[in-house]
Length: 501
Image (cartoon, rainbow, N blue to C red; front, top):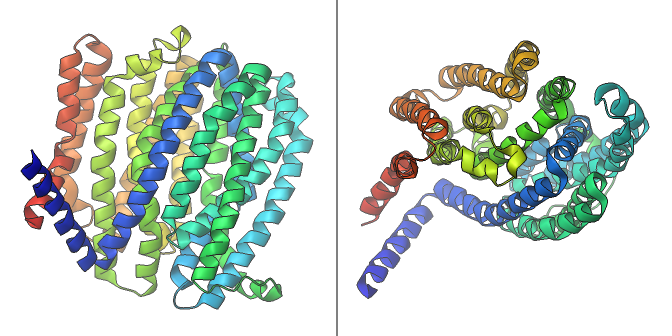
């Protein structure tokens, strides 16, 4: 046993040496490691908190919380104005070669986020009675929407500061912040919901966002000092306003085709008979989407600033290799998570209570859509880091049209399942045209070389949909299926072990 431990330790040391020889691999591994450490703890605690909150509120009230969050997300698109991705890209690109410029862009994003966040928070406050009565079909939610305007403002500022930290590749600091927020989430949420119901849930989200904003502010000051980024404030930041039209505006337009479209389709559902109950089921199933999205998002968040820096120095080979690496690892991480959630969907939904049992078909459809979404995020990272924001906006427009059109047709007949199918169809189309563009225009052979992995994944997901909902008592068979889904990841680990030896 002791010799085995020594052998593994030697292997890890050799892997570290290999990473040190490749600057890009080292940066990616370091960023992904710290994002993973912070995110796993945060997501696990948040998931536990969401399950407890759902059990305390029941599906109707939990549907109300989900709809208020969706509405805030709609306003958040305008409040954010694409400033998060703008801060990440340009700070990553200029923090070393032009610290003065990086400082001006940082000041620009902070000032605009204060203005846009404040305007949209006030707008949400004023419009809350009309939104609650006319669009959400629940006049009693007006006070909850009004209170959530503060959450909107704080979340906007916190999101921009966190994105700026990503531009510095300060993933260790981000990990610490997310861990603190994860620890605080159930501690704050459970008593708030217990005493104040839906209003308490929104209050707990606001308090948690404020904690994140405070910690991000401290961390960002430290990073600016380390990279010699000027922390003075004057009107010189206005000289960088071109990035607002070149990057931030199309970034916001792309987001406009996400949150508002999501809100529209959610509104279609809640206005159906028993709509809030159906949306409560949908919202509970959708919580597991966060489990699948999280791990690939960790890798993508680490790769985005690296790709931006590589694109800035116009190294096509490194850019193509990094795009291919991102897609491959995103795929092999998301696959076993998707298969696991689909296969054990019935057991997972039972955690939320008896009212949520029977929606495993919905969770299967949503998880496939979510898998396609993670693949899209990896491919979209290449578009964003290369500055092809308007191209991405056009592609997102196609996704939005497909989602709304299919929702209008399917939701009246199938309720929450119709919404889940609509997501699946929209993301399938989006995946196809995004892959084609990146393969032809940006990174040749980065996608086509993964055809074996694509075929293997398609077969495995179809099998999981058949075995999961239909053969509910065949636990051993389900476990075997999940183990098979891990084989691509195991193959890469085995190759790295052999290479290290």
